[in-house]
Length: 299
Image 1 (cartoon, rainbow, N blue to C red):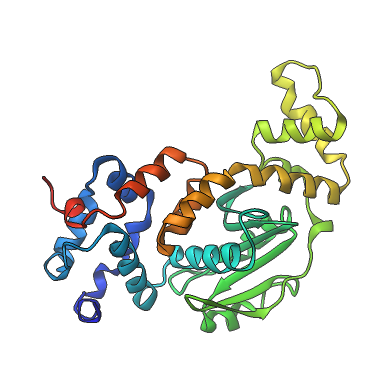
Image 2: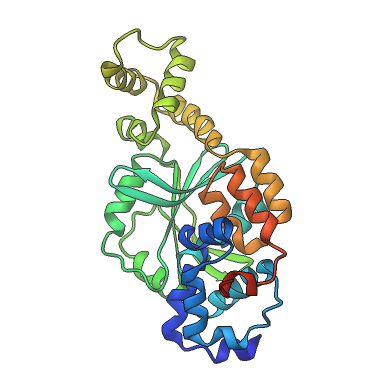
């Protein structure tokens, strides 16, 4: 396998990095074939070097390990956080991890929900810091703990301009995340109006009903406005904690636990990104042990 890695031109690294995106995996699951993956394997020379009897499970792990050594893109960071933080330090029984969580005009890369809320903004070596300060400002409106996870070299750059309460983490290897600076609690600075707008209608109506005992009896056109007013009158700490418990329900714990027990570690972040899509997960499990030739050579 090492020889295969050494012979792949680095111009194909970003293309291989897209293996873990929904457009590729959905085709593998729904059609048992991915035109994109087939093209990348052919153009990069990987098709002629692979053992085509390799299972899809082993192929996922092979590409993931390849990317970790050669092209640590955003997915690599997400997957390490999922395995090391969610599954390593916490448990699906008490915690959840959400990917691409909407916060105003930003999307938080990874959000951990346990007894509190922790956000991880990923800045790989291929990312710029152009939007970082605005992203951090957005996250301070919504989350208790805010972290940036990056490379050793970039950690030195961001430590000079990020507020002291922002944690800085560095990805060392697949099993190690080094803490350069611990985050400090930001809970009392949370802006409830912005937190409210990160919620879905069923979530904010549930919170209002749970806290006040009922939902305002008004036309649907007024529900949003009145629920937001009521939500913003809840003490910050209470509103945050209730919201965390509601957001945990976005993913189905039982479905995720069943899948994690059967899945290669390389695919965990993708599964968290599709939340509670049980049919998709079951279909993916069903093809793990099929040979890779079935997915990159059209019938």
